[in-house]
Every structure is written in C-alpha cells, then in structure tokens.
Amino acid sequence: MYQVNENGFYGDFGGAYVPEILYSNVENLRKHYLEIINEPGFQAEMDALLRDYVGRPSPLYLANRLSEKYGCKVYLKREDLNHTGAHKINTTIGQILLARRMGKTRIIAETGAGQHGVATATVCALMNMECIVYMGKTDVERQHLNVQKMEMLGATVIPVTSGNMTLKDATNEAIRDWCCHPVDTFYIIGSTIGPHPYPDMVARFQSVISREMKVQLQEKEGRDYPDYILACIGGGSNATGAFYHYLDEPRTKLIAVEAAGKGVDTEETAASIRRGRLGILHGAKIPIMQTKDGQVIEPYSISAGLDYPGVGPLQAALAKTGRSQVLAATDEEALTAAFELTAIEGIIPALESAHALAALPKLTFKPDDVVVVNVSGRGDKDMDTYVKYFNQMNQK
Ligand SMILES: *Cc1c(COP(=O)(O)O)cnc(C)c1O
Image (cartoon, rainbow, N blue to C red; front, top):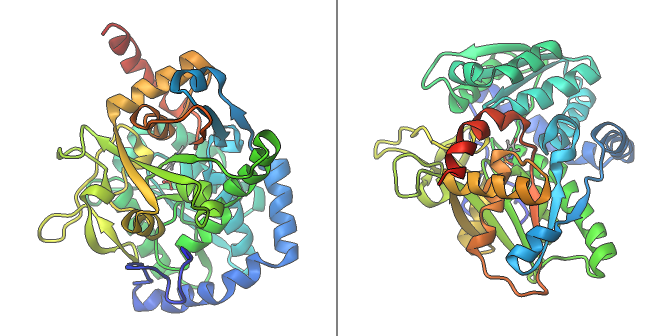
C-alpha cells in the first residue's frame, strides 16, 4: 500500500524531475534496478558483504535501565555498530554493486557531515572504483576528520563554494557533475531522496534493518512486530529501513522524529515536514523549507546529518496519511537524550540518533509495550559538540 507507483510517486510525493541530459541515465536505472537487485547472484554477494564486511545482523539490544526509566521494554537496533559507524554503509554497498553491474567506472557522491562520503569512499576502495565526493566548503572545515578519512580511502573531496557551502549546494554540484558525465558515472545518493528510482532503491537496501528486526523480535519476544518504532529523519533513509517491513502492520506505531533545532516555530530549524511546502528539489516533489518566492531556506540543526531542507517522498506520504506520527526534538532535547543513554547504558549515540531517543519522554507507554529505537549511528564524530555541552548541561 505504501510502495512507490510506476511513475515514482508515493501519493503526492516523489517522481523524477531531471534535466534532459540525465533522462536516459535515470531511465536506464529505473528500467534495470529491480531486475538486478533481485538476481540471486546480486543478493548472495550483497548478503555476504553485509555479514562479513559490515558486521550484520546488527544486534537488537534490550536496554534494561532505559526500559525501567520509561516503563516499557525498550530495544535498541544497533546500526551504530556497523562498519563506518552508521546505517549509510547498507545502501552504499548495494549501490556500488549495482553500479558495477551496470558497467559504470566512476562514482560521485554528495555529503554533508561527511558520513555518506566516508561510506561511499569505503566501498569505492573495496571495489577499486574512482570516487569523487562533493562537500560544501563550510562542512569541509567543520568535519575535518571525515575529510581526512575520505582522502586516506583514496577519494577526491571537492569543496563546494556556491550558496551556503553546505549539503544542498554539494548536492547541486554532484548533479552538475553527473550531467557532464552521464555515461560512465554512477551517482551514489545517501538517503531516500532524489529522483525515482533512488528513494525506492535506497529504501530496499536499508530495509535489511527491519528484516532483521522481525527475526530478532520473534526470538526475543515471541512475536515479530513491536508496538512502536522510533527513528530520526533527515532525508528519511534510516527511518524507512526501520519501518519498511512494518508499513502494512497496523499493530506497529511508526514514530518519525525531525530535528527541531532551536524550536519548530523558530527560524533555526530543520523540521521540514512541519515547516515545508510542496516543491521540487533534487529531482523529486517533496515538502521543502522555502521562502515565499520558492528559494530554499538553509535548515539548522545541531546535528549535521539532519539538516536537509526537504524530506524524502515516502516519509512525506507516511506523515500525510497519518501512517506515521511526526514528532520533533530540539537540540537541547537531543543532547539530554544522548547524555542519558551514555550515562545509563554506556552507549554514545550519534547526535542524529539522539533525536529518536529524545522522543521517548514525549510518548506514554504501557508496561508490556515493545519499543524499538533505531540507533542510526555512533557518536564518535560528535565528540566535539558533546564535550562543549557536557559540562554546561551538568551544571544546570
Ligand atoms: C545521515 C544520518 C542520518 C540522517 O539520514 P537519514 O537518511 O534520514 O537516515 C541519521 N543518522 C545518522 C547516524 C546519519 O549519519
């Protein structure tokens, strides 16, 4: 019911709005992606890499102290334990295998905080492919460690100096590159965004998260579905992966958590479902934070992975139809949740994932409720931010 239609739409959202020069390229991908990713040989190679290289299945951990605190059973889906520290590797592995089968020799990607850039540079090293990563100059300066990792992995990082020099500008530049090299180049997109078939393709690669959850919950709880799944949303890929096999399971409530920044009603926010208006960005019709004249507003969040000015078409449709409930967590709520998880469970989450955790105190649970929080990544990359606020918040 929530699957993409032939034209790439989920209800009102999605589609493929691409310049003429990319049309045949995107069309070629659309025609072949399902056939390729459903081949037994493709799936065997992908499953082996997910197991032996990424370290899947990621554990589903019953967090006892967190459960006690929120009066229900809280499980954490540990995407933070994946190779490269987040869920993004699930889709970069899938896309590079697809690129190879389509005869592509050159990989491009965009990155904001650098997590997707690192995951892409990693699989390019693994598969011996040329890798070019576009990254806003501001982000290059803010996320220097990830730039160094990408370079050590053999990628070329190109700082983008247009616009605000952040993720949106890096994405524009990657699309421009793709237009110049439509034949040999595969564009690896890091989230459930971009023109059809990207959102569906990324959703399928990330769906391994909920595929594993079903098996793990059956083992631990004797039923394969939870009562709640909580996930943060930037473009929507980790949430989509965590929700995917439960989209048609009415017993499971899906909670998507946006980054409120300083507050959803302030000018410094990344709550693009609440604040967005329908428009076209990066090849898809989605809710976008924009001015009256349709200029994209630079989003703000303490977490670099959540400050995309739009949201992917499936997550937009789930919100609109009421299949998901959309909450928002502020910077401060996310920091509090991150410090809490660290103190009582010994797990330092990514700032993005901390937004999902910050939804726990906003919901009311029954003691038997089974709640899964998708911990999309680990906090190593956020240590500078955590250190800055840790003493400050403990003194309050
Ligand atoms: C990139 C990122 C996100 C946000 O992207 P989605 O596509 O919405 O999942 C969330 N968590 C982590 C750790 C990330 O690196």
